[in-house]
Amino acid sequence: MSRMLPERGLGSASPKWHRRLWMVLIVYRVLKVLVGKNRALTTLLTILSYRFRKHTQAYLEERFGITQDEPEKAFECIAQNFKARGEQLFGPGWIYVEGIQDSNHSFTDIHRCFFNDFFSVP
Image (cartoon, rainbow, N blue to C red; front, side):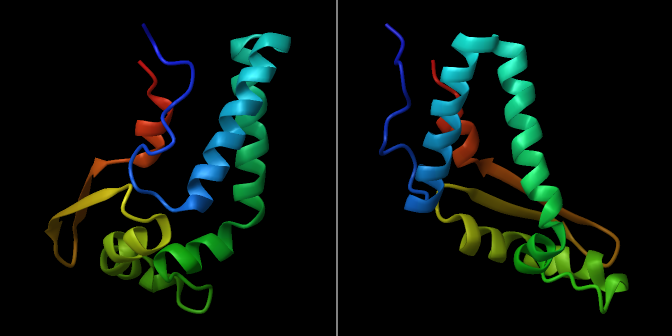
């Protein structure tokens, strides 16, 4: 028997992320009934990507430490901040494992993603 909704205690992401994901899931399920799966997904993608695009610079600065004052340091900022700021911003519902970190490469594997866990309902 499959679950109708993900379990609330899934992972250990912050309450902020729980609220946001529940909101997206509820809107998707209502839209899916009204307009079908593909249109529901397209609508949500449009809404969510618009908000992200509107605040891209603020996100890049908060998430990675990338500023418009020093764009040439973007790679360095991402390499330094991807894991630490990801853990700080998103919480323990994500597990990051750093791989290669040098002046030319920055590899970080995400071993657990709360978004994936939340939306992967069996």
